[in-house]
Image (tube, rainbow, N blue to C red; front, top):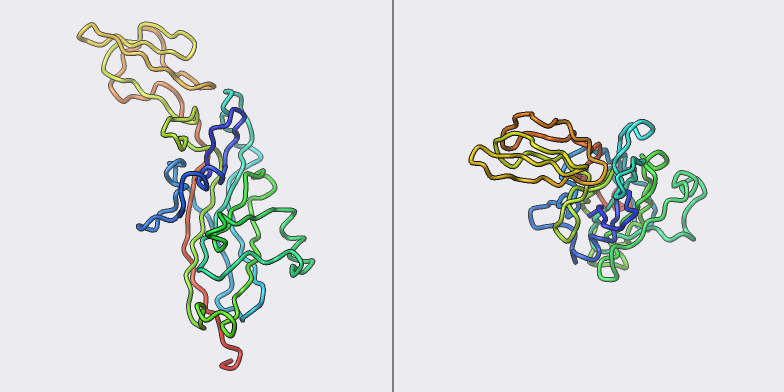
Length: 258
């Protein structure tokens, strides 16, 4: 979901999920983001246990990471800061709170963060990012609660919400090719015979050779003459990010029953 393939990509692009997945939540419950961001990292989501009709409530999505210290390889191979992105999959009829109804304290908490509907068909799904992780490690999402007296599809009762949060670039682009934010491995037992920039040549025991082309910015950790085994890392692992998801429930409460 939140991975990109633009030349200056620094991570977390919800638009790629929007272009490739009509519905970002699979039947298994997995969010599409996990197809490109292979590392798993925790998120923490907090929201009220109960809400009232036609009110606005806040959801906090925390995407923890040491953003000031952690760096990742950009598409160019240079090191850069981590961006973050998030997605919220709400029940139909639940929507992003309109700006003209946002109280000033909520606007202040949002720090200018812009949420947008996933698509015209799915206004109940919203996305944000990419934005700097150093500023938006906590994302505030304001939600407008439906009114059962006007929306019969949303009666009083319990509802489930699904959230995803990501920090850093993905390992796989939507087209299926790998990004350079990956670790590289030997393709066979043998001896390293040449290291030409980011190309590592390994001569196998049968006399054939295999060449591993590492991505821009890769840190090669083997040397010419070194014996390696199939699947052995030949670079460090540059990925310091990852994706996490959480499911939450709340109750749409009837004021007359309080």
